[in-house]
Image 1 (cartoon, rainbow, N blue to C red):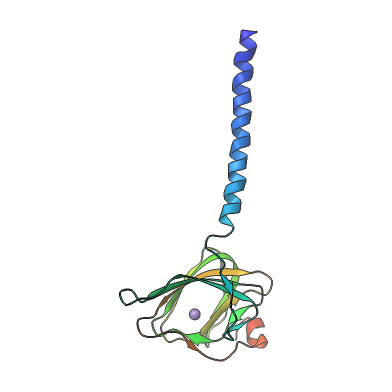
Image 2: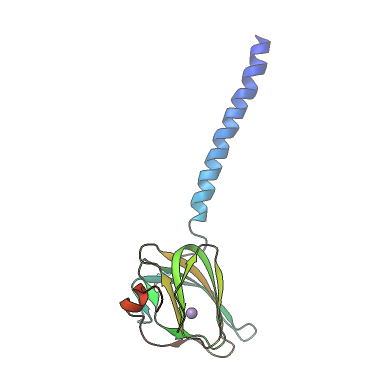
Length: 161
Ligand code: MN
């Protein structure tokens, strides 16, 4: 009898531990779905489609860098625009596009990090069928974003315009 328990107890504990591990993994996966808050729906006309913004860091007199979490639903994108001090985009989820004027459209995926040079007109947004979440790190030292024209459906859907 003693022998049996000494076999069964470790097996039981192992099974229990395995169950707990599985629960932890599931719970951690759920927690990772949203890293930063989605924020509020953007209602200004600088975006096409549905997008959300949560400002995380405001620029101030000591550090002119602003950080915002932007979530684009499929098909949503910014207008063409430029940043006097440039911008860095860190992709935290989904699939999106980034395009500089006169350059091919680039596909961005979770984990990608890119730098938009100062004063170069560009746009960014979700791909046609997948949402896109990016942290926009913007240096406002030399001024804030300059908004330009809308990204037409033809440009948005083109692979190289
Ligand atoms: Mn930008």
